[in-house]
Image (cartoon, rainbow over all chains, first blue to last red; front, side):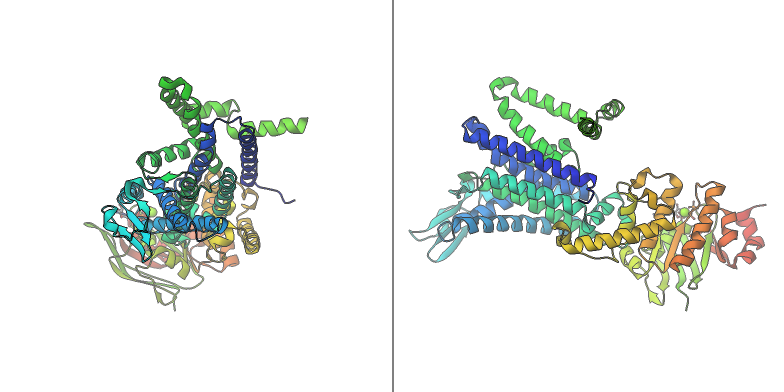
Length: 357
Length: 252
Ligand SMILES: Nc1ncnc2c1ncn2[C@@H]1O[C@H](COP(=O)(O)OP(=O)(O)OP(=O)(O)O)[C@@H](O)[C@H]1O
Ligand SMILES: [Mg+2]
């Protein structure tokens, strides 16, 4: 076998860890050892981990801050759920879900692309501001959007259900603030894990490709990148579009896991965008598997601490601060380096031990 | 026809006329020096030649083609590459990748091919690796290919920047103070390297330098800039003996 470089090794080991966790969780679920709360979190955790991977591509490799990735997730969720519900009885399950994935991903990518065109031409923190606004606008538009379908076709309204003017046999597909109800629940834990692994492979390959090198070059030094002939806007657009697309995949998974899909502040709003940014920062900027770990830990933690009721958020905050200090505080980083406690050093030690045995 | 022809180039920053009525003509294959006191406008000329600054007046022709005010990336594609006075490497990437980024426009495969690692990905990456190592070996940097660019010692960073510029396959190479911060030994090595790359890459060179030993040692022609204006220009020996130049720049 060819010698693998460091990043490929890391990818393979993170996939292995995900698979082990997957097997443990599925077995626990099958044998009834997983609480229904935990069980219900499996798919959403994967969905948010996907959004975190997407955001990490944007923050870590494009070097731009986005405060609206939950908005792209929202676009992926609603477009795919709309499709699945509309064609629920017309297309068989499997091809319909595959198409739903394609559609959700495509529309999230499209929105990412359209937003990025004007914004990425500018330098500065414009992307953060515009994506922040986008996330809020998309959420609010969906909350007043009514779509129905009857024999004569689709009806739209931004006012209320009555103004759809449908026949008696008409079906309401999107019902304003109540969102979309009755989307087929097709996001299984297995599909979610497979998509998560796919996203890790895609992002790993992307950042180690010709395009990825160009994106990193632009991040490292835009002027130098221009003087070696790189088209800056093109590569920024590609990276941001892929980043939004991956968030869209998370949205599709999320939408096909719940009965009633609504756009609230907690699942798609500003709060969620910030939460996802927290996963990215704590998992390590530019470290995709780290984003997955941080998402899993920080989503599961509040649920596991539920018994402690009042102190739950306090402990949660302390863990957050602790993680942040552990990963980023210069003093602690120096201490870890001096005492052989960085992730890399620990991994090396572990490997050496195995060799000795 | 000259490879680079600059006519009456000028730029103002607000009220400051940084460069005025600058003329320059460089023949193919020449090694040309641009000298002058601090703040004379030398780097500003480079920035205009590479499209980083848009000149307020004048014209720039490369190989007869008008490149005035074009985008930096397009000027590079037309055949101009450069280094920077304050080194600008892609610090978070390896030495090898820095050169491979320079090769970006010479070897192609699409994003899709890269993401799904189709056969063309492996074939092209292999060719890029080989070519990049070949260029690095000219500078004796091939052994450090895997090192992070920002971890190289200063002198080698300057060399890597030249290697990256050469990877874009330029007709004209602009070097902004390549010997800055080097000791006499390193400067001597650099002079040898410059002679070698002229031979190996057949590239025309315009360089800015304060080190008079290097300038008189390798430059065939010189232009002296003072307060944004050309003070003298011509054969190196003639220019360096010009009383005006001695008074304004060389001192004594
Ligand atoms: N972007 C800018 N905005 C305003 N003034 C500028 C800008 N770039 C350069 N200048 C001014 O133009 C003049 C020429 O600067 P330049 O950097 O070209 O000098 P130089 O000849 O390269 O000097 P040195 O030998 O110190 O590198 C200086 O007065 C500088 O302050
Ligand atoms: Mg200068």
